[in-house]
Amino acid sequence: MRLDDFIVREMEPILAQWEAFAGTLLPAAASMKSLGLRDHAEQILRAVAKDLSTLQTRDAQSEKSMGRAPKLVDAQETAAQTHALLRARSGFDINQLAAEYRALRASVLRLWMDDCRPEPPDLDDIIRFNEAIDQALAESVGFFSAQVDQARNLLLGMLGHDMRSPLQTIQMTAQYLAHLNAGEQVSGAASRLINSGARMQALLNDLLDFNRTKLGLGINIVPTEVDLANLASDELDQLRAAHPGRRLELEVVGDSQGVWDGNRLQQLLGNLVLNAIKYGAPDTPIRVVVTGDAADVRFEVKNNGEAVERLILDGLFDPLRRGPNHEDQHDADGSLGLGLYIAREIAKAHGGDIDARSDATETVFAVHLPRRQ
Image 1 (cartoon, rainbow, N blue to C red):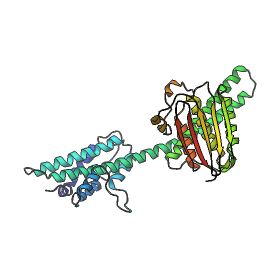
Image 2 (image 1 turned 45 degrees about the horizontal axis):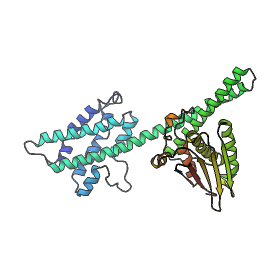
Image 3 (image 1 turned 90 degrees about the vertical axis):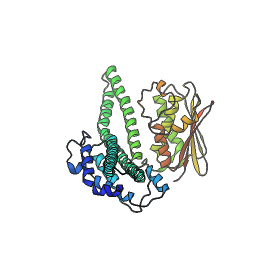
Image 4 (image 1 turned 45 degrees about the vertical axis):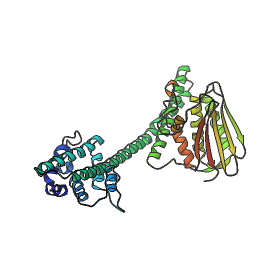
């Protein structure tokens, strides 16, 4: 008997084995009933049987074995995709999801081969069955991963939003204590609270911005008429106060006015300068050069230090990445490795871009911004 006919005829025994195996995937399956354990299994099997009975070229088989079957126009979710979605919501992990397909593959082939005896099973059916299972597994894993990522990002977004209120209360209380003039010890403790709160606020802002980009929302900007030279001067003044031992220099050439989100550009510049402070040579100045021409404005953050390899340089804008030898920097800011990633996203939100270059002389991060988007 051909495998597609066997699957349709023996649907119930196959589903019984699926259900029995799914029931062992604890703790998610502990409270699930038969209907939940068999979720979309019959639809998946009928789709596999239909695929086996459909004529197919060798190229199409090869593509399907790698999970790249052509998508139908205006097609709804496949049974495998819906199954993955419901498994994710039921608390299964991705290894358990994959294990269901491995068990299904083994049980169907074992039952069919036993039924075929003494005749040998059709090898082409075995190949095509494996390809169909691989396609279903690829569809399930893709949907499962997307669902888990979305749930995690939503959780991070809600967590970050809810943390803002108690953090603001801590900062306001610390500032109140600092102004009481209740003695050096109280003022010192209040100052430490204020600094720690500021670092926590920066981390929280980075987390929320990162989360927005992962949800596909991008960096939120509110453009107005601003002067980039004034923004850069203000930001460098704040950074000088926080890092009194470092020399921060500003040079402006040409017209630096445009339509941008001033707060976001200060955040972008601050991230680049803080990166230069961390990894640049401490005894040399960090130079910020703002240059305006007719179409756009460019600003560069330059620092001296060891040259950064091209491969490392290209990966610095990836999220959750840090600069070279970051373990030796002894940072006290608890950085998440999101500063350069968020800087790039801010530039993109303004219709601009950011790139980096490095040699034995200096490392330069350059930002291009159109004057008006």
